[in-house]
Length: 242
Image (tube, rainbow, N blue to C red; front, side, top):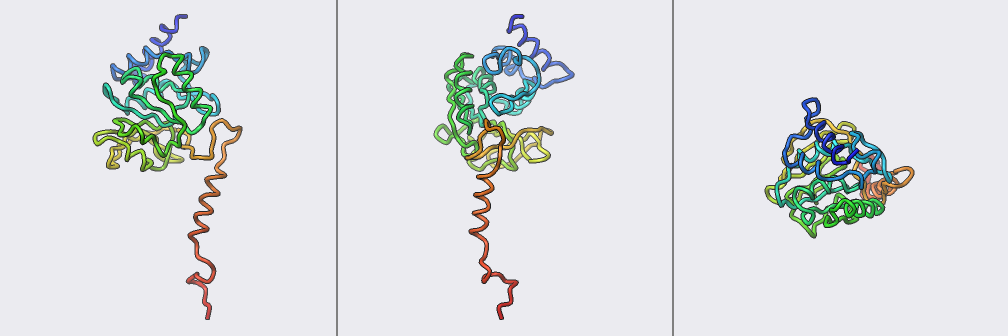
């Protein structure tokens, strides 16, 4: 079947009252225009479910739509995507605001190369994709009107809030066991939009494409920090040295 027809069917389903995740005209138009095959392959392209690729979770179309409705980018906005993944979300944004206005970062080098290739194949090669620690953002291109984080954290990284324009907004999942999709203003004011389930944001030393993700380096750094800040035995108040 013609992929364009499948895309229309997908978006029609996302706009249906039973789903209702696509509500904006811009998002409907963008998702109908951007082919998913370069990003996920023909078999997975228009099924509304997540799956694994190169060690990362590819979001379902309905989850992408939910994120982008919350982000609500306007024409010509400067947008940063933290967690480029396979590049599909960045492509939908590029269709709306222009490829030159979208930057995406990912901590996993293999995903950066994959996203670049996928975006170029889909016709959005103008999107900049760089390997960075997501919590650090991409200050060279700041300020951003919109920042989208496709990974969960307990609180918004300070560097990302600092990179927002005065009237900008940051959208990301907040929480650990129980997460909620949040819209965060530059000053930190937060609006919660309901429950979600995302993987945690990775930090330097963690790779999405390893067989088993672990927190060894993070734990080592935290242990070393606590050890350095802890008191030696002779400094402990509870020891009666007399």
